[in-house]
Length: 198
Image (cartoon, rainbow, N blue to C red; front, side, top):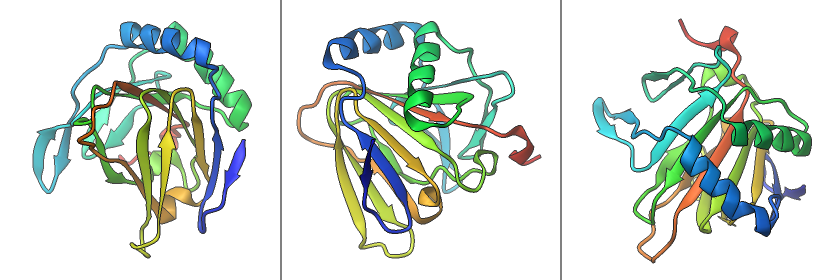
């Protein structure tokens, strides 16, 4: 894993973590196995469909509250169980859940946010695996707004965010007008039920 120098954060990147000859088959298996949904999110008091397909997957106790909605986990698929083991070995962390996001084209996106919900703990380890089209991943400091970092995450790349990263940085996957293919992103996490709000 290659460390990325960023203040108030601990980031590591392994380009090509999944070898090129595996990526297409893994993406096809995940597309087939995962029960994709359009999650409804709450923004400024309004409920709107999220601009991507998603699925929350994990151990039975790994329920997750995001944007005012509680997500009960779907069961692990065979492909995601195998990937979890590989990502755990590479990152030195344990995961009991994964958020799968499917960006069908450049119009699908993820706005700025931090993975800082109470059930993730004070210094969560988030391992983000990309499959498919290369997309811009942007980090912006939560206090020093002009301080940003852009990464181009491509097929098979693994980005690990840990330590104080979520406390000090927001991240996003912006829309793009240029023609771009589908991208699947898997963010592995550890949910602590004791940290969940009542």
